[in-house]
Length: 533
Image (cartoon, rainbow, N blue to C red):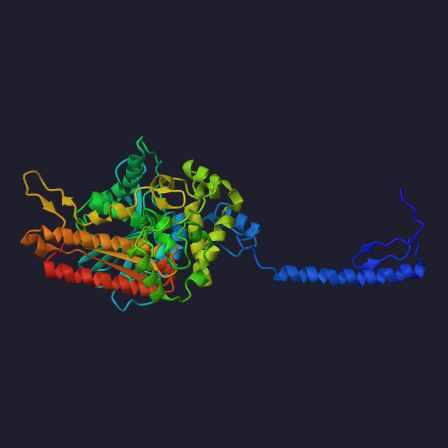
């Protein structure tokens, strides 16, 4: 029922004011014309706003595109009116990423691989070969990509392992430049239960907390050692990134005598007290896992003041807890961790299980990370890496569940590397019964960080000091033979214009530095007569 009003009624709609409840017919026509013009103007403004509106700040991939990617990972094969579809497997997505490697060819059958490089290789025929290496036990196998020059004798072996939740495909910018070195065979591995390796059930049987951590570490390093034996590799150089670096340290301590050099690229889990270390760090001041998901790589890869960072980090490592008067400085306030995050972490709810549970929204959530992580790369490469990341994340949960045992909430190690780094390269080497005891006499350890790395550089510099002291102590009580065999050294390299994924952010610098490190390995092997590989 309409309510009659004596006075004038004002009704606002699309900037039109009704001056009376009972307008005349001429006024109605005028109002209709004005209303129509205004509606046309508003529609044009809405359309323009939609066209210029940026994608979601956090999840740029649209809902329709996300559902399209999720729906069985299909790919259009033909241009027929009724398209034919086939399922895209994780190995196919991995091959797509590796297709961006110049000059290298896939060993199996280049003709069958439409993405194989057609460019001639000036260094000879170098091939990459993907193999699933079966290990003992149920559903245990490591996915490997081997790069070598056809018909060339192997003098040195480099093994590369990735970080948490990643895969060997992320090293696609490094495989070709590094293998230009004569006599080098390179293996890039997916850790057990990650990447495209098999996904056995992850179970911890220990009751003691420290033993649980050790058991979680052994789950990976035992697989790496079994793989080494399968490949009949006696001694090699090991490069680990992030969690891979942490596990590389654990491997060197449990299985001594097999490493010629250890290269730790932005390793996780170094500091014992991250808050005290970070208190003296330059901006950005926090070293947290959160930065991995919030940092924008287009900004991270911009040039910064590397020298200033190195100087500030060195000062932090030299005196992380000392005040200006030499007394202990007050502890830095601990950044509070949300209780819900602690609960999820302790309940071992992995971020990838959340992605799997979101169904068609999974690719959209993944785009929140990939859009920042790879936005400094060309479009086709960025898209291929997004597809590759999602193909890994959506697979059955396995090795990812080790994270909560190895790291505490906030991504700090429950068994910090800084407390055992001094023992790296100083372990007794198992010998056959009746043979004289033998001990490692050190090997080079290299720490690498991006200048804009969210992993703290001070942890690496503090480790450098401990390794130097361990070497001095060993030499002080070494025999003459042990002194001649001494091979320990340590250095920290800062990669400019790079963040945590330094091998990808500034591949040219990283590759040049890695090439130099491998040249040093070759020189040392020649000097000592070590031809094992």
